[in-house]
Amino acid sequence: MTDTLVNSTLSAISQERRIVTAIPGPKSIALHQRRLAVVPVGVSSALPVYIERAHGAIIVDVDGNQFIDLGAGIGVTTIGHTDEAVIAAATNQLEKVTHTLFTITPYESYVRVAELLAEHTPGDFAKKTVLVNSGAEAVENAVKIARKHTGRYGIAVLEHAYHGRTNLTMAMNFKAAPYSTGFGPFAGDVYRAPNSYPFHDGLSGADAAERTIAYLEKTVGASDLACLVVEPIQGEGGFVVPAEGYLPALQAWCTANGIVFIADEIQSGMARTGKYFASEHFGLVPDLVLSAKGIAGGLPLAGVTGRAEIMDSAQPGGLGGTFGGNPVSAAAAVAVFEQIESHNLLAEAMRIESVLTPALLELQARYPIIGDVRGIGAMIAIEFADPATHKPNPAAVSAIAAFAAQHGVIVLTAGTYGNVIRFLPSLAISNELLEEALGVIREALASL
Ligand SMILES: *Cc1c(COP(=O)(O)O)cnc(C)c1O
Image (cartoon, rainbow, N blue to C red):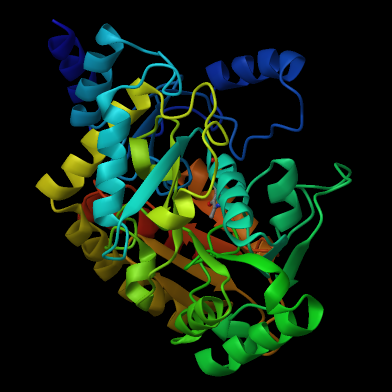
């Protein structure tokens, strides 16, 4: 009964772009008026079209407009909106039990997610996982665990990093506005080092690593650092791919100095880059790996996975939380792992790169305001900058995103200076939809 209902709703969403009203349409405008009265302005929306349904790579608004979704809710619906297996697993779990609290009376799906993360994160050693509700909460827990394990306090992060909106993670972000402006005082003992950003610094991986390490040695000293937190490919920072050898050099330095090396794979993980975790592209074996966004097909779930001896340094009762590892989210996550395997989604991410990257390089050749094309798998970005000075060009990015939305394509922006367009579609998107979306980007560039 449930299955039939679900399937009939899903099959009603054709995988095509269709704009039938002005954007936003009249129903969205009416909803937006209601929202303005009751939702604070601090919670902003990039595009105030109100979504009713979604499937695969298409989202449908309340006015019946269908958008090609190149953002997947910031890389959350990585295996596709309303994936049938995720819906079935979550629905089945909803009918059985929705909450007991794992720290009171546990259940199997939490354990299964921990097993799957142990299996699919890099490294061939005993691993353990704590499940929480959000990416920021995973970062917070990783820092807690690293501090307990090392007995040290210092947290090292990189320039252009983004780690969340809680008090500690606000202190770890590079960009103040809008994330932390006016929200201080912030957590202390966070040390921000220069990163590797080949388009801007032109440094080799070895030279960039030497700069990062020298900076941290000078400003805090290795013996006071509990952890170094890196995004293997920076997300909000603009899909910054570090120079070859940079991250392995940082990891080697951490290992030599007893610093816990933490990979924040909240955006880059869960098959997004054609590997389960982007760390694999760089030969990294992090001590702790953080997952969130794409792990449960749109349901809230996050995890810290790492070396058993580090994870076990927190005392019983020191980790957890009311909703952490919720049974419905955990069941959905198990289905996500199964879908990645059974539909060979790692290869789908590489298919997406093989369509996006050549097309974007071609655009770069035609439009010199595209300074850089970078990324791996279904995590690709273009950075807009002055060709001579590399001065950021956020105006072009805003204009393209607005043009795309008007023409039925959702594209997300990124970058410390708002001058990056990032492509992170679901792995379910067809080549035809990708080509069509690229056609809209091409028109947008031509219209500038
Ligand atoms: C989104 C994100 C976070 C924060 O996750 P939330 O679930 O929004 O708290 C942390 N790190 C990275 C790399 C992210 O992309």
